[in-house]
Every structure is written in structure tokens, then in C-alpha cells.
Length: 360
Image (cartoon, rainbow, N blue to C red):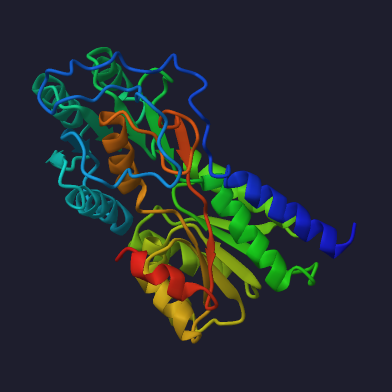
């Protein structure tokens, strides 16, 4: 199979991964919450509009007030901190949105109690990034049964009835994007040594990223030679990278799954005095993009895992509350699932992404 054809295959996989863009239109209505009482606080928020949105959409125009309850884990990681900041910033753009922000917590019991508060207060819509999707499923079901639509962000519940709409990143697509970039850079060397620094290897998201990476590498005849676990922390990344560099005297390319742990990875690389390889990051931090922009680093690219997912959730919650659909879609209602793309950021396009990057 020619090189030209294999690149085409990878592009097709990436395009599919984007899910164009993941809109599983609301053909399945079985997970829709009962229509809220239009006389409740927050005014009318009927799910069904009286007419489809006009082409071009006037969705940004002020409408009925929507009270949105928002809950996310503690901001103990750069990406997670950016999630809540972006959600608040998005809500502040809309004069018809009242955002009720719950305390960030990694305690499942506490997050459940915060959700119970939203239900008791009869907010119009709940946007939740659960600390643990499985553990938060039951309370999300209670909200839906109470007539409050739930927008699930990033970490999925284990029941399709627990959320009206789900906003997801693309972990498998991150791996595909990283592997495709490395294929383009070193794929002509069939003996290239490829290393991978995962986050927490036994998490499903890490496994999805690794599978996408392996699938993309296989398309150009490469495979992962060394894999270590960085634990999604700076200290963990430094320790993992130090062990990796000691075990592999020569490396051609490294994919580090997470730019926050990447700070430790880069520290270990500097300590070891190694620069014979290229490195690709993950998530899309500002620090990583500054290095890419400088051109004076082993860091040549990073793959974005959008920290704007909760902000997208706020936008969709507002539309749900006002009975509108997404602009530029013909369908009458908000999609059931939205999956975001995982683009590769390089020196050539970093200017397009650095302003929306998160701080580690």
C-alpha cells in the first residue's frame, strides 16, 4: 500500500473521529426529561420549539431566563481549573443566564449533596462534570426524573437515561492525531523507537488514547516500544520520564498524554541532556504551546483535549432551557451527544490555539 493511500486512511479515521462533529442527533428521545413546569422559577423552558431556528440562527439574542446549576471536580489540575473558568466566562456572556456554581469537589458524597441542592432549588438545567460518572449516575437520574435536564460533561454516566445531552472530548481521536503526526515526522524510518507516557494507564480514557495511538502508528508500520505511566502529575511525569530515558538509550518520538504532567517530563529530559527525539504533548496547555511556538524544544506539537467542554455544556443548557436547537443544524432540538475534535497544534497553527489554551 502506498504512503499516499495510508495517509488518506489516517485522515479518514481522524475525520470520522471528529464525528462531524459527533452529533448523534436526537433521533432517540427516550432520554428526554419531562417538560419542566413553565411557571417555575426561570420561566418557560419547553424542550420543543414552536418552529425550527432560522438559518444563521439568532441564538445569541437574549431570551427567557435560564437558571443553570453547575458542578465539577476540584480544580487540582490545570485542565480542570480551566473547565470551571471557561464555564463561568461563558455564562457571563449571556444576560439571560443565572449560573449557580457549586463548590468543586472530588468527594462523590459531597457532589451528590450539591446535586440534591440543585434539584430542591428546581433549577432549570444542570451541567455536571462528575468526579466519577458511575457514582453520580443515580443522582443524575433523579434530576432527570424531576424534570430537570442534565448536561453531562466529559465523564459519562453509566445510563443513557441520566443525561439529556452529553459533551465529550475524543480520547481515541487524541491518540489517532498524535500517532498520525508522528507517522508523518518519522514514519519513513521503520526502525523508529516510539515511546509513550500515559496518564493513569488503567483508566478507560488512557486506554482509549493508547489504542488510538497504536492504531495510527500501525498504519505507517510503527509501534510503541516503551510505555510508562506519569499519573497525571508533574512529579509522576518526571519520575516516569527519568525511568524511560534510562531504559531507552535512543528514542525517535515520544507521545506524552498530558501537558500538565509534561512539565515533569520536560524537566527529566533536561536533566538527562537528551534531545535526539521529537515530543508530542496532550490536552493543549499554554506552556506546551509556548514551547512549540519557540521552535527551541523537543516539544514539536500537542493534541488538544478541549478545556471548553463545560463552556459548551453551558451553551447547550441555555438552549435546552429556552427550547432552541444548535445554530446551523436543521434539527429542532439540541443533539443527544456532541463529541469534540482533537486537533494537532504545531508551530504552523499555534497562533490559532494559544489564546484558548489553559494554564498548567
